[in-house]
Length: 92
Image (cartoon, rainbow, N blue to C red; front, side, top):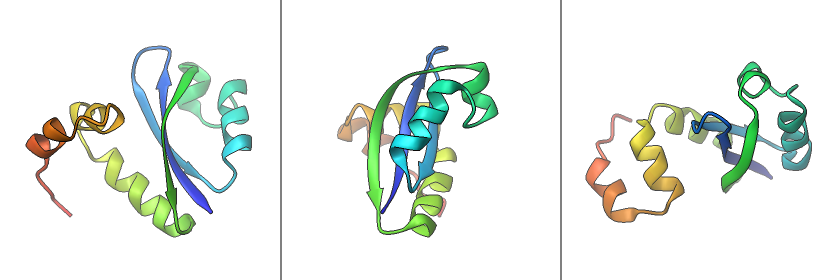
């Protein structure tokens, strides 16, 4: 199983990633060795987790989410469906 995840960073920004080993990936983010982003801007909390059928599906979903605006990502994390619908404008 693979996952797409949202992290809140110390700066207040969100980070979107994907993995097949969530526990190890979160440990790596906490230690600052998962990527340059969380090395420079440490993880504060896991905000959202989306299970995917496989790693390919997770990478596609991650790429889709990374193209979203910060406001749209925040609406998803907060489960604000009304705002999410308002912001929806598919380019896929």
